[in-house]
Length: 407
Image 1 (cartoon, rainbow, N blue to C red):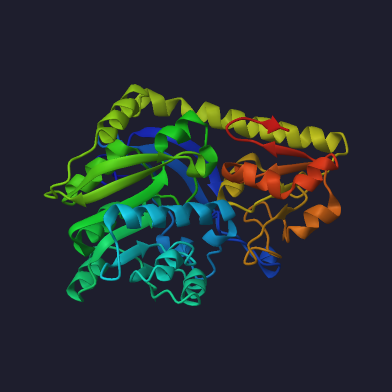
Image 2: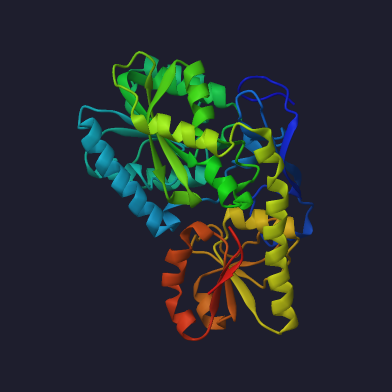
């Protein structure tokens, strides 16, 4: 296999999670009697540009189907994050009724609805039918296509170049990251700005966040690597922010290479920190497998001990990261009886691989399990607040990452 960015041979292994189904391929009751597709889930790292990437097995079309069931609006904290971004970026860039905003992977309109409310013209690009329909119902125009260089050029030719192109948690999801980045370049007005948010590889390693690895994530990104990819497309990262979202993310600000804006000190400081933490050293990646296995073993030991003691364990949040953990650990409904989720599109379905039933959140209050394992640990505080009445009745909350915690 060659590096998806620079074409170098990939010899350095980072993580092997065995075989797993796509993490968002939720199953209906009828699906349980049919064969289920599994793919190897392994990561390699390029020792030239340091892009961490999955092995090539699953196509984007097979992963992001019409039934793709991730709806951003299910999380209140994420909605607040999006609203705050729109407020601050509108002021920073001076966006108004003459501006054009494009969001790539606009999902269910969770963010663009804020631009619509402010009367700022916008366009969503979202290939998944279920989420695109939800956005259109909010009055957001949506192109149901995968984004890349061809679409970027088409938008420019049609006079729909953007003052702002944003993409939250999409950059890691594209199989051809070079084509995608050239698309950003093609669709960006002179003087325009790109902002991309993605989980920071440095935090993944630091916090043992192996469960953020799944087939839909083709890449795992550092600032250094993103800077290399941008440069190859005629773009430049001129600013960066560290965010707490998704266990530690970056928001990079990009522009055309010849843009007069100066690169901020924040870029150089973070590049130096990444180097100090070994993100350009093969040994850093070689050590990660053991850490992932320790998290898995501790989570499995907890579930087995709870069963021996006759305790009931349920989960909250049918998140992709939860599917990675459960499938790596081989957890089935005998150890984890059900998972509740606020997203209606997931309810009354089953987790891929583990076949654990997904139920309405009301069920967790009806059954009052002894333990609730919060699978989307990045919003654990939000979930504990939502389920506070269970805690008052003796239920304890469990998170597995970065290490097993019961409280």
